[in-house]
Every structure is written in structure tokens, then in C-alpha cells.
Amino acid sequence: MKFPLTDQLIEEARRFNLRSACCHCFYWRPGEDRCAHDWPDEGQRRWPLDAPDASGARPTEAAFCKEFELK
Ligand code: SF4
Image: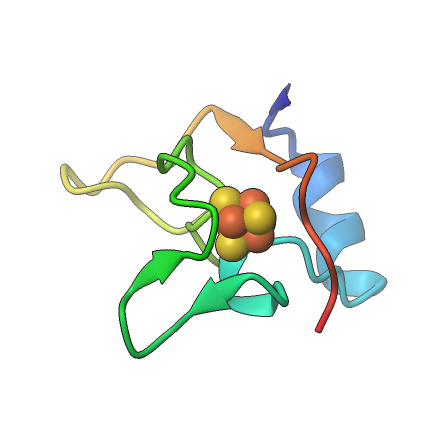
């Protein structure tokens, strides 16, 4: 699911110590740099939420995976 990446979302993610990315997920296989389900990267791997993209721009959306399981 994708949501607009607003200043409020970024501030609340920091304040409440949100963990929502692949690196926080039980299904992430860091040694293989992939999801155990082989889900494509729809943006849920990016952390922090406002990490700049390859062009250096701040993303406009945040992606949350329905399969996420906090490890
Ligand atoms: S289940 Fe979703 S959040 Fe978890 S590692 Fe796979 S793609 Fe990332």
C-alpha cells in the first residue's frame, strides 16, 4: 500500500520509532539482499521513509507491505 509521504508522517515515524521497512521484517534475508517471498521492491525497502532516491530527491510516497512481520 502506498501513502503520500507527508511531513506529518515523517515526524510521527520518528516520534513513535516506527519500524515498517524490509530491514525490520522477519521475512527479510539480509545475506541474500532479498525478501523471502521474493516480493518486488515497491519502495518498502527504503529506510528511513524520507531517504532520497538515486537522483537525490525526497520521495513523494511511502510504501507499506501487507506481509510485513516485525522481527
Ligand atoms: S514481506 Fe514485505 S516487508 Fe517483509 S521483507 Fe518481504 S517485501 Fe519486505
